Image (tube, rainbow, N blue to C red; front, side):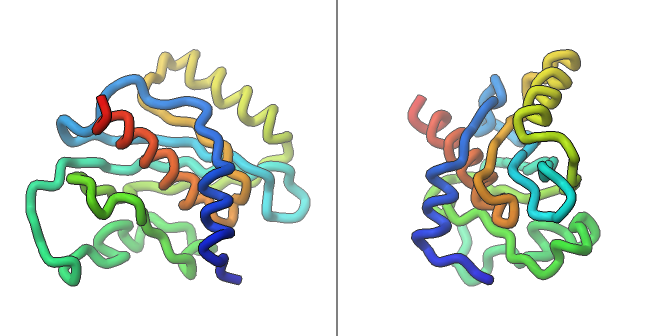
Length: 163
């Protein structure tokens, strides 16, 4: 069931960015890993965790909008969970930004622990690994987690362009 524009804006607005990477992403080509956590959409589980990496690079080539990348070119068919293949993925907020974003990897797990417990374990894991590059996001609706990932990337781009 598709969401209306106001419903997507509500997910975007309610997304919580818990942790951001501690380096700039616009000056060159960077990998932006993330962990997106929210209430489970599968029965018998409490939390859904989505881990992924977005490739962000400066966009130096100007091209007409009808030549923009297709779904397969951006996300790659082999890196998508079979249960997600019917979904549409896209980062809508970057039209006027001089960057290109594409997804390299997606992993979806359904967990029996609460969102708070998974969040605490994830933050602990990242601290133990001294990981300063991975972002952590809480989404209000895991079915539409790409909206929350878009919010995360938009916030980072806003920081970069306003700095």
